[in-house]
Length: 137
Image 1 (cartoon, rainbow, N blue to C red):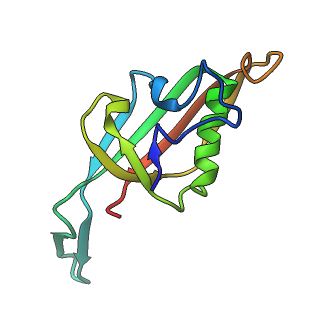
Image 2 (cartoon, rainbow, N blue to C red; image 1 turned 90 degrees about the vertical axis):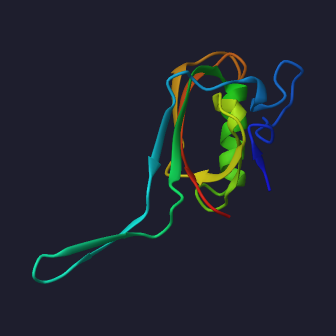
Image 3 (cartoon, rainbow, N blue to C red; image 1 turned 90 degrees about the horizontal axis):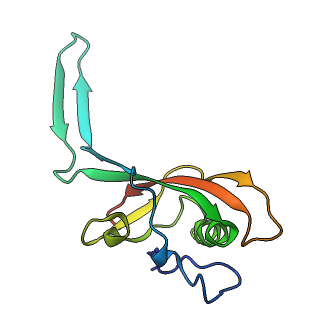
């Protein structure tokens, strides 16, 4: 099973950039916690709620601003290798300033915006954001 950020590498590995382990996301990352609740509503309007699981699912929104083309290539390669939201992977929480690891998958599309075009992959500047949601597999 792949581990983010260590397995996110660009096509051409350079000495200056080997993996995403060295590039941290922006400090303002988002973190949510949601419980999976089953809601039963009768025809008379009564409502009954119960927990499907006592474990909440955590979700993260990571953003990388003003990164070069090698970082974009590494993140995009990792996203394509997981087939988007199909395959789960291990997220090392030390990458976002927490401890431990969790199983996550991509939740939605990978957003890549070109900020400035340069002469090559190392000089192009991008903003990248994506959502991750916890899985139990």
